[in-house]
Length: 178
Image (cartoon, rainbow, N blue to C red):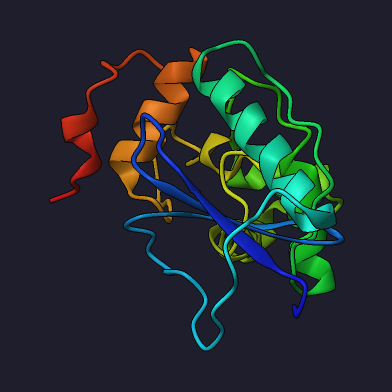
């Protein structure tokens, strides 16, 4: 990703690190992401110029609108890297409407695989490089339990409460999972 650029932005769920290249937004990381920021490459900061800079500016604007409850759907070019199966799962995640949740088994059915593929769907969901925008936080356990999230269950709970999918206080102290 030689043309990649990064930008940092504050948010109600902590600082976000955004990565884009000329093809689209390639990554969003929380300051305490479970998978961490990709290593081995340092990208220049967005300078507002070029296609990657423009994509980062749009991503920041749309995320700010989402957090201000003025946006429920993101309209950005995306450029995630993954296997064909992961890409299918990530594409299906974008069809889960704002303010709703889907089980891993339901997501497996949505992509045309048996519900027995729920574990594979969960693994692909957990590798989503563009959380919030590709709403992996909207996938929950079959019994309604909140399960794994790269940014921590506190952030998942906050995002779902922000969208009105669950009733929970919007308390930033919940970001620290114990």
